Length: 311
Ligand SMILES: NC(=O)c1ccc[n+]([C@@H]2O[C@H](COP(=O)([O-])OP(=O)(O)OC[C@H]3O[C@@H](n4cnc5c(N)ncnc54)[C@H](OP(=O)(O)O)[C@@H]3O)[C@@H](O)[C@H]2O)c1
Image (cartoon, rainbow, N blue to C red; front, side, top):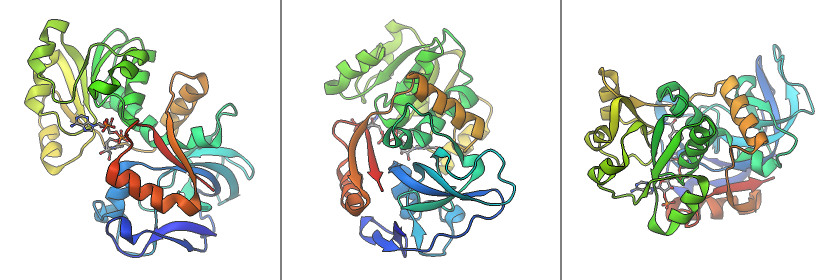
């Protein structure tokens, strides 16, 4: 079996496409034959060693946390899934290794793939969908008819958060590049401002119940100026300073998304119903994944959308 793996933490140059021997599934684990995997910014954070406390020092390590595929084998105590099931989800952060022909995951990190989604579409949704859902509902406590502002509203998480909020009857404003404003408007986002907006300029358009910072560039004091009384600010950038701030009473929250099965099921349902659509910018085979991952990491995707790797 082949997968993208690395033998030390580091930049794009440490990635290799190599043979590996997938482990047999232990209790609660599922071996998945991967059909498609998707890249996320956290993949290069993990590969760079940003989560060493969780990922440890044993190598080689696989790369990638979003996948769709077919259940190849199940371990003891696996109750929801069986061999041959089409699934989406991902391995644990510690395990990673979704950009591969085969990967081991926990059963709780996988749900059935809706039959109307392609493997590529299904692989694109787990991380951005779960993060957006948990930001809106768990940390943001979003209610129908509330107003939301998404900083970075056309990124993977930002776009998913905007769609989830709109589907729940909220109104959504957001920031994006001026050249992408029309696309944001097409999603139903209004008002739309540029990334370096002045929070005071939004005061004439009312304030927000929930501000989501997907970029990590919105100063807390600026975000707070945009809030209605009782509103919340959610960041998905868990730096020590932000975590310390979030531990204090007040509107500021930090989300570290978790693979909750029910949330993954809700995200899959939203994708099945079409209320959550994650565009795919580029699809490449596993043999071209390192070049495509490197380009994405170093240059970004000018048009947005996910990089999907098929196996
Ligand atoms: N805490 C968690 O559990 C968690 C979970 C998932 C992701 N994350 C983190 O959240 C971040 C976003 O993830 P993603 O998957 O949405 O990434 P993404 O798809 O790359 O989206 C990032 C977005 O930010 C926009 N952006 C760039 N510069 C900006 C600026 N100065 N101000 C505002 N927006 C700006 C980008 O716009 P352009 O495309 O136009 O450049 C893009 O739309 C990543 O850092 C990721 O590691 C955290």
